[in-house]
Image (cartoon, rainbow, N blue to C red; front, side):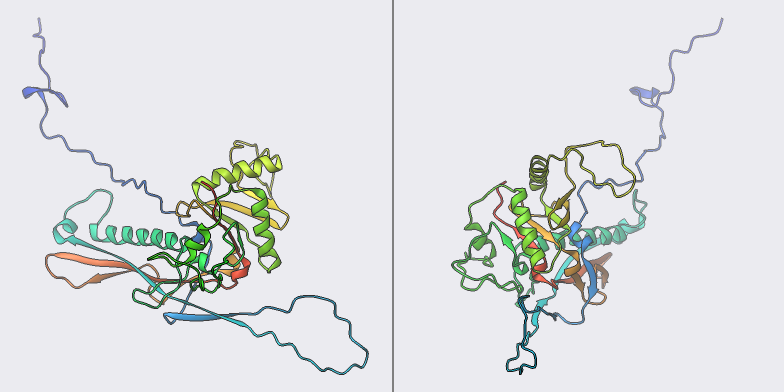
Length: 340
């Protein structure tokens, strides 16, 4: 009769019965939860400029009106329409990293080389910083560190903002003339904060769209924070009786969700609702991508550089020297002082 085996090697067991020599298992994938989407940056045109301050011109035509002239009449008056000249400045956004040569030499999971991996991560972080900056209040400045004038300093078609009785919204990337400011503020947020907060509504969106349309623009996207995106869906569905969240330009598709409106057809064109995690929750931007460009200096568009060695390590940084060319400030619109 065979002897019964009372012990056995196991992958996991207490005492001497546990097998020795098992290899560890570490997934060769690194999960990144933090979002890297930058909707505004992605939608903008891209270009380069060759100076830290750059200019562009915008031509406006005389207002349309009655134009009946006498036959053979003499011309006695002339009405020229000069161009408007705008300027913005380049801003430097940078993040650095340092990795020991030992860490670069050992085998690592999910990346071939730690220093190269860190360079990519720093570029992604800068992209998020740039998106955040473009959506928050900042006026152009040549004082060190230089700053680019962002959306709120350019857009003149505003809804629900203060009436600027204490100042004038220049719409040229500079500060509000005569507006009262708090210490460390640029004057934009202070002026808008004077308005009473109100809920986002279809009527307000229509008013903003109309203002931009009458000035020659045709916004095709509305940038919303997650909070305002929910309010946008509620407002457009209740106002229009929307049943589907899709507008199909090809063959009809089965409706799978009716909880969110992605495209709103206003009287002045369709506008796509885009959630931007970096958009402040007290506002919404209506953007015509044809009239705004993301510009960088040559070789400074999310570039990575290595620093000279100061020891047994690799040092480097990612950098972007960037700005915005808001070609037609009147082509866009913004809703401020929205309740959250």
